[in-house]
Length: 123
Ligand SMILES: [Zn+2]
Image (cartoon, protein in one colour):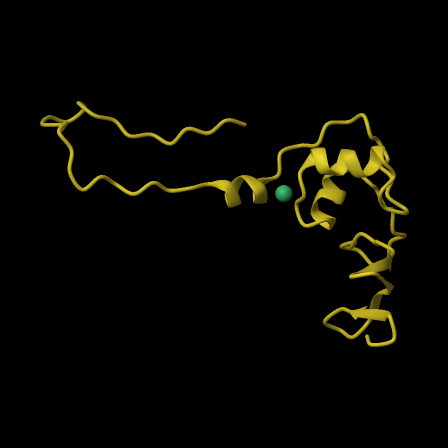
């Protein structure tokens, strides 16, 4: 930094991106490689909505579709753009909330089975 250029490294000190300053922001030149569990096997990169969703740190599908439709990111393409994106467990879990119990209520269950509490989940 300081010369209008920026270099980003991962935790192993590998260069992962370079960029140049454009006004108040840096325009990054980034290439994305999806991790593989078997490094000895030829890497097949599938650019699915789900992969891009994780690469962009769980941005919503509408944001990804907008990026694709307006060609906002160089190299951003989707292998099967018409396929739906499956639900993301991490996003569902992150959006869960837990309401606190009321300290006082006027409705008390007096007998077993009078009141039932459940968690609802739509998949
Ligand atoms: Zn997600």
